[in-house]
Image 1 (cartoon, protein in one colour):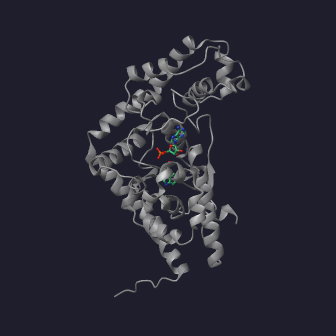
Image 2: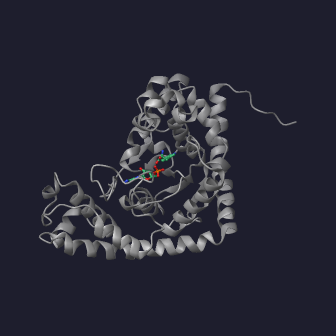
Image 3: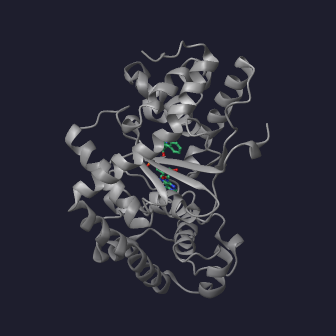
Length: 342
Ligand code: AMP
Ligand code: TRP
C-alpha cells in the first residue's frame, strides 16, 4: 500500500512511570521536538493505560503523568503546535485495542522480547494487560492513521508488530484502511547506555541512580554522575571505528554528539586524542547547559498543575476530532451496528 494516501502524521508515547532520564530525552523527546513543525501533524501521548500493566500507586501515577507532561513542554513540545494527551482521556485508544486483541495472534505476542523480559520466569502471574501491551500500542498509533513513529531502538519489535496488525486487519477485511507505519529510529542516541555498565541500556528501573541522568537532576548531580561514569584507560580515538569494543567510551561520545547536535565523526575530530579526565568535564558542562533549563522549566510547570490539566483536556478534544471518525469507520468495517439518531 502506498503511504502517500495518508496525511503525514507523527505519533509517539512515553510511559508516565517516573524518573525521566537522558535516554528518554535523547532517544525520544528531543526527536519529538525536532519533528514538530510544517511537515507533520504531531501527537504525543502519556501512556497511562500502558503504565498500569504493572502495578502503579495511584497517587504516583497521577504525579508522574503531570510531570511527564511538564517534561514534554519543558523539552520544547509546544501544545499549540502538537497535540499533547494522556491516553486514558481519549477512549478510542482502548476501544481500537480491543479490536486489535482479536486480530493479533497469541504466538505474535509471545515472541515479544519486552514481554519476555518483563514477565520473566513468572509469566503465569503477569497481568493479561502486560501480554496485550503491544496491541494497545498498535491502537495508539493506528487510531490516528499515524505514518511515522519516532522511538528508541528498544521499541523496534513493537513497531513491526504494529505493521503486522495493520496488514492482517486490511487483509482479513479486504480493505486498504490502516497505513503501514514507519519507525523513525535515528541519530546518535537511539540507545543510551547505563553510565555504570556499557552493556545495559539506561533505564528508569535500574536500582542504581548513578546509572542514569534524570531530567530532574541538578547541575551538581549531573556533573558528579558524569565524573564517576565508567570508562576505560585509553585516550579517545579520532575516528568512529576506534570506539568498537569500547562500549562505555562510545556511549559518552554518542551522548555528547546527540546533545551537541553533531555527528560522532565531528565530535571525534575535535576530541580525538584527549583523555577522559579532559573529556568528562566538557561533557558535564554540555549536559548541564542543555538539561538545567529543562529541569527548571519542569519545576515551574509543576507549580501550575491547573495549566497542565487544561493542556491535557484541550489535547484530548483535538485528538478526538481524529480518533472518533477512525474508530467509527473501523467498527463499520468490522460490522458493528452504529447508533442511530433518536
Ligand atoms: P519508556 O520510558 O520505556 O516509556 O520509553 C519512552 C521512550 O524513550 C521510548 O521511545 C524509548 O525507546 C525511549 N528510551 C527509553 N530508554 C532509552 C535509552 N536508554 N536510550 C534511548 N532511548 C530510550
Ligand atoms: N511502549 C513504548 C515504550 O515503552 C511507549 C508507547 C506506548 C509508545 N504506545 C506507543 C511509543 C506508541 C510509540 C508509539 O517506550
